[in-house]
Structures are given as C-alpha cells and as structure tokens.
Length: 213
Length: 213
Image (tube, rainbow over all chains, first blue to last red; front, side, top):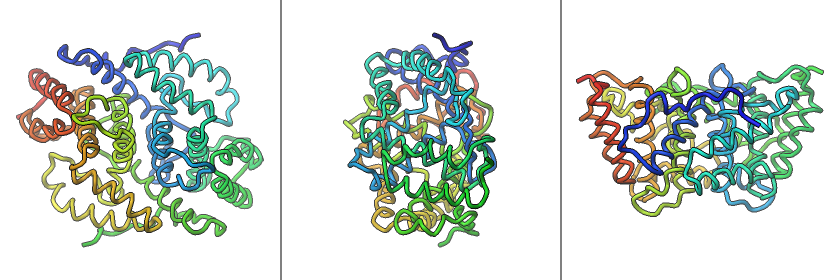
C-alpha cells in the first residue's frame, strides 16, 4: 500500500537554516507541506469569483460555519473541537487528492490512498503530536462523537450552499435530486434543523430543473 | 464613515427559498457573504502553486499553525480560542480589502474602512451572535489577551514562511531586512521561540541578498 509517485517535500525547495532544529523543524516542515491544500481543487465552485474551490478555502469555510451554526447541532457540541476537526479533516488530500462523493471511479481505492497519505503526512510531526492530529482525523472519519457528526454536517452542507449560489456549477453529470438527498441525509445526524434547510434547497433546485436525470 | 460603493449581498444573486427564515436565514446569508474571503488577494504567494494567496487560505493556514505550534506560546493559551480568533480575524477584509503591512499608502484610512466593514458585516447576524463574533475581532486587534498575542504571532510568521519558500515573491520594493524585523518583532509577544526562528529566516534571507535596499 503506497502513495503513487511521492513528490519531494515542499521544504526541500528551500531547506530551513541549520539553526532551526528539533520539534520546531519538524513542525515548520509540516506547516509548509500542507500548503498543498491550496492546490487541491474540489468539485464546488467559489461564489465570489468564477473558479473551483480548493481544500484550504473549503476547510476555512467549514470552520466559520461551525462557529456560526453551532446552536443548530442535534446534541450539545464542543464547538472548538468541531472547528479543530474541520481544520484537519481534509489534510490527507494533500497526497490522496479530492475524490468527489458522487464519483464512484474516483472513490475506488480512495480509502487506501488516504491511509497511505496519513502515514506519510503525520510522520513529519513529532510522534506524540502526529498521533494526536491523526486521532482528530480518525475521529472525524468515524462519525461517532457529536463533534464529528456536526463537523460532517458542515462538510455536506457547504457544497450544497455553494451549488445553490452558483446554479449547480461543478456538479457532475448524472447527479439527481434523489442521489443528492441520499448522500446528504447524513446531515441530519449532526443537525435535523440543517437537514431540513438542505431539503428545502434540494427540493427548490429540483423544481427549477437544476438537475439532469 | 462609509464603505465606498457597497455591492449587493452575494445572497441576492439567488435568494434562499422563503421556507428558510429567522436566525438560520441570517446565518446562511452571512456564511454565503464571507465567501468573498476567497477573492481577497494578499501579498504573499502560495508555495504549492504559482499565484497569490487569498484570505480564506491564509486564515485556514493560521488555524493549522496555531494547532501545531501552540506549545511555543510565551504564556499558556487556550488553543481553541486562538483558532477561533484566526478564523475570524480577517473577515472585515471582505469589504475593506487587504492592506499590506509595509504599504503605507494602502494603510491610510484602513482602520476606518475596517470599522465600517465590521458594522455592515456583523449586522447580518442575529444581534447577540454578531456582537460575539465582532468581540473576537476586537480581541484580536487589541492584542491584550495571551490568545490574541499568539494569534498575531501566527499572522506575522506565516507570510515570512511563505516568503522564505518562494524566494520573497510578492514582497514590495523597498522592503529591507531592517523594516521586516521592525514589523515582525511583535511575534515575540506571543512566542519568543518563534521570534528567534523568524530572526534566523530574516538573517539568512538578508545574507542571500533576497532584500533590495
């Protein structure tokens, strides 16, 4: 199990001066490496300007949403932990890339790619810290804690909101209102209120003929 | 005191269905409006791809840095609060734009523009929530709490790190090692360790002739 064709670390383009050592060297190496998030393009389009969104922007938008929408969580949540989870949740995509939810070909092997990516990425950090950040990703993926469930709700609601604003830009061929409903129903696990709002958006988009099939 | 030529809200391009009302309508309006952060370009260039960074990416990168570098804070900090501060700290730039630290012409009137922008932006939210988010911005700007000081350290260190990686790309004419040292010394208020590392980067950049004057 390996990440295909691993590129050199970004830091190798201009290594840090030798006076920077130890944990701080490891941490700055990691911080530079995850700059790659800004180059991972998603299916969703930005509202304010005409281009696809990237993972760094998406993660920031989710953090903002978690802060603003916390009162709508199904169960009481530690908002700060939700924010931390969404800031970290897509990091493995710096090596594994974004695999759209509706694209089965892209999803094939994605879990394996993400596990390999996590192995490579978190190993850059001091051991205990790498384990701690990886645990946040595991928590998000496991969808068991109230914080992970609410974080996932943000992650599903945000692309729907961008699609609403951009007339469905970036949505793949063959996506239907029914398939969107099925993929997004998980929003209700974190917030029944927000799922109700999401259903309103899907229903109205369907009425306006924004979906193909 | 007013924001020059206010544009219509982004949400007016495709208003939400009438079934979405009350606080949730206000909150989703705000969440869509701040998508503009993705279109506010900064002086710093992205490392992973050849273009300027935007405010959404920058804010995400600071959140990640706060999580990774928290142990280097001068005083114990509530990391979650630091993350919240950096996620919110540049929001007023959706209307006021980014005014680079080293550009005195751009800085003129910037405080006034940001106050006007805050007035307009936070008024979109339910009253109590708008006041709470604005208070986070005020806290960041006041630079008094340990969390605000560490957040500011992230905000000053990150562009230096990007400049190191990109060979000083985006740096204005006339910026010298001395002027950078003066503007960045505030990093020490949040973290003497990180200021020491920053000085290493500035010294080495100077040695390599990355500065003009």
